[in-house]
Amino acid sequence: MSRSTIARINTHALQQNLQVMGRRAPDSRVAAVVKADGYGHGLVTVAKALQNADMLAVATVDEALQLRETGIETEVLVLEGFHDQDELLAVQQQQLVPVVHAEHQLAVLRDNPEVQLKQAWLKLETGMHRLGFIAGQASKLYQRLQTCCTQPVVLMTHLANAEQENASNDNQLKAFDQAIVGLSAEHSIANSAAAWKLPETRRDWIRPGIMLYGISPFADQTGTEMGFKPAMHLCSEIIAIHDCKAGDSIGYGSRYQCRQDTRIAVVAIGYGDGYPRHVRDGAPVWVAGQQAKLAGMPSMDMLTVELPADSWATIGDQVELWGEHIAVEEIAAYANTVAYELVCQITARVKKEVI
Ligand SMILES: *Cc1c(COP(=O)(O)O)cnc(C)c1O
Image: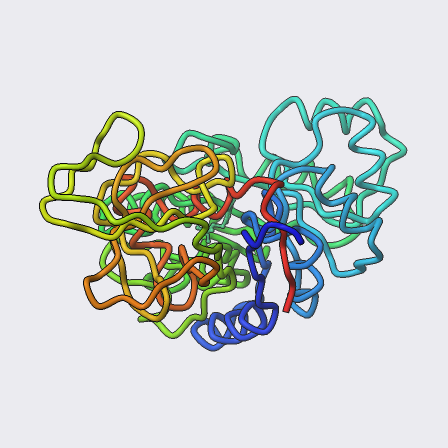
């Protein structure tokens, strides 16, 4: 028998979330972001479920090649583009669409004048200071990049604060729109948060990631509350139960102390599986049809949960860490991080079951 610590991946939820996103921005095409192993859900599983999107987007050429190797023919945008000649040639051969964001990439193109790309996206820096050319150079760079591409170059930028109300969003938009005056190219600005909340960022292409997995980027709302469906259901089972006395302490560092007589269930999942170690006591865990509370520091292979007084839980019962009843966004709040990180850090030990 194998360990029952499983991440169930719901491909129907992924497809439904793509539709919900599409309806929110009906005039835009969608580049569905599947980087980082499909946000921890499994690159190929997610890409297959979302291959009807107008385009798929990954971070690296390696990720794009994995998609091609499994026979996915959807257009693939490579958000960090190529770094050297080998990657450029792979991009050309596999008909990938690279983002060109820096001078060294133009140098690689210059050194390979025979390479003609299907298309490229030109990334402009408008305030985040991560990737992109200084926006003022847009027109010149656009002409230059177009000479290497068969299809029209697309212009893009990325917002630093799309999930918040922040003056920087307006500033970045203004910088972008000023820089591209007179260029009749298509644009792309919005990630999930912008596509959802900032209509003026939707443009020709949106680039949603996190929401396609049913997760909200906003602090005050879960994906479920916005009409999305969680695509990952992380579950395990109870492997021991203890009747503890008032004053007993639980786990490493004795972080949790029972205030009264308490039944403690031990669950077969820990930070070695990607459950966050720094989650605070009280974080919700779904056990035997009820909400229970994390009690004590999660260890590598196990964590401990205080059962409600009326719980029927027994050894072997299913436990949900997040998914249907528990929002991963809530666990992220208890761990002082974002849900993006939690789903990305599920480790290889956790079996994925695709439904
Ligand atoms: C990761 C990424 C996205 C998707 O962001 P979400 O917040 O997950 O929607 C969009 N654009 C770029 C450039 C990215 O790197």
